[in-house]
Length: 211
Image (cartoon, rainbow, N blue to C red; front, top):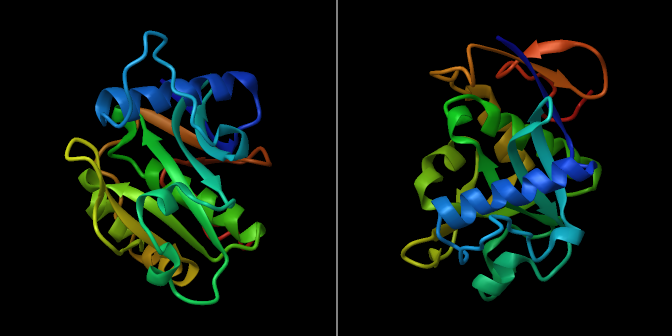
């Protein structure tokens, strides 16, 4: 079965509907960070200020994350004096709500979402991003250049490590990306917008937004 994947900024109503559903599945049912709801939908409190970087397969959302540059950040509320942990003279944004469907977690979809996000952030003039990374994926974050700092935040059931990613660390990390063990499905291709050229998932070019 041949499928076509697209990395893009979310703009369509159905994309936001699935973002809210994946948000619920990840941060209520899998990581118990919020209370259950009968609608199985979770609208982020910063939803109107978020820019969502997503990966879709036709009309299905496979992965997402949110970018926001307005202070206070979510991490400001969890960790006092956030700026004291960060390098000086940087333009900071925050990455949140990183979620990938389980059948795609052994692919490079995570890396490609970060690559698309780095490209977006650079265009917005940001050179560092902070994130509360789940402890379950701490090594994966570090593999992509994220630097842990400060104490663990959250609850015992939903613990997160504050981290930051600089442009320099990201550029260094992508030279050593490990190929995935499993494909997202039998055959998948990635359509990098804009343009009609299809490329294999995990072989995404231009991760730094230099073209």
